[in-house]
Length: 265
Image (cartoon, rainbow, N blue to C red; front, side, top):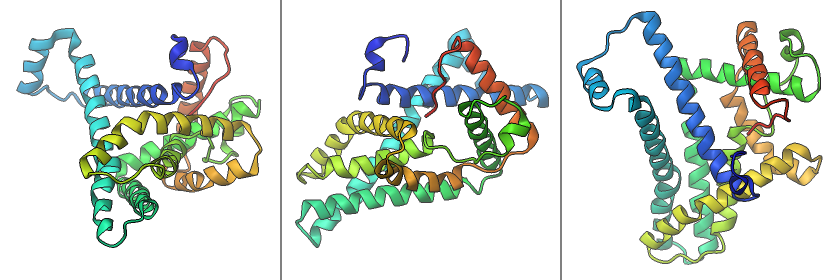
């Protein structure tokens, strides 16, 4: 987003930062899978060979963008369209749009928490969450202007105010506020309004989390506190080797950024 000034504008950068983070995440997971396959000497399937023959060197990029699109569609369906559809039944009991909006938002948050609790039971995801905790410890160490060593990083918490978990939770909360100003027309119009307003919600949420990360305002701290609690699910205490990986990754990012201030979301 830094390459184009438009993508760096307040309330615009949030949406593109979210997509950028998703692309980076999928690239990282794809790279890890490829390394694993090389170490295990896994033979490509006939379907893999067929795709490689059709798309050639572009196959990796095509699969990555396809994964991003599918991930975005599933996220919108599960966390936005689904709760909107279910909350529509609340009209059988009340005509108050504020109440219906609150029901919709509460369902969205509940689904999100249940989703995190569910995937946290998976062995591979637990390990990813340990690396997530290591990343936060390394960033804390950097922000406190200490030398990036395992010993220095180990003492810090795995929780961080500018975490992606915080961002997603704030998106849920901001969506309740923004959507409360809307009436409850037909279900399909309602669903479309959710999709079209998602960039607005993401933009506002991004600015809130950036401000909270740099401010000592107690109201903002209270606002992001539930997201910090959710990080107890998405981050785990890492071992020293995981801290070493996090520190090496952070140093690499700092070199790539040419010494500019490092920001995390």
